[in-house]
Length: 112
Image (tube, rainbow, N blue to C red; front, side, top):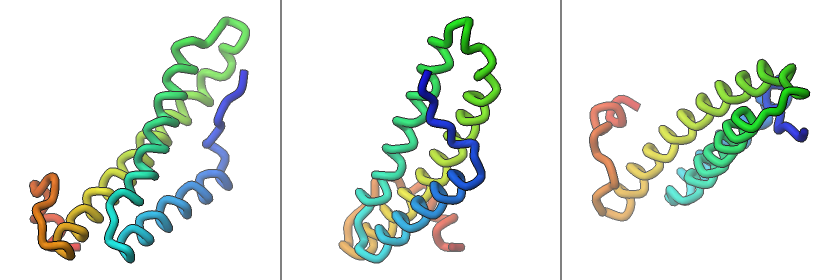
């Protein structure tokens, strides 16, 4: 069974670097869709890990701990990329002079 094992520390550092670079690229060009790429990718990875966990056969039961660790990491990266997307959406809305999708975190963005 093939597993996207993202619990390796080097893989975590590379994923974090790519996420941060995508968010800062999106900030520089004021496009929230670029930050959405990271969010979409991590959501797909989360769905893949959930599917692997639910369809795990008896011969691969030893992989349960690895998959659950990957699921926890997926949730953290979804959270990071979601807040990055909301931040860039707010930046894009201010640059283009339009209303952002969700303005409920306005108090938070003023402090950032």
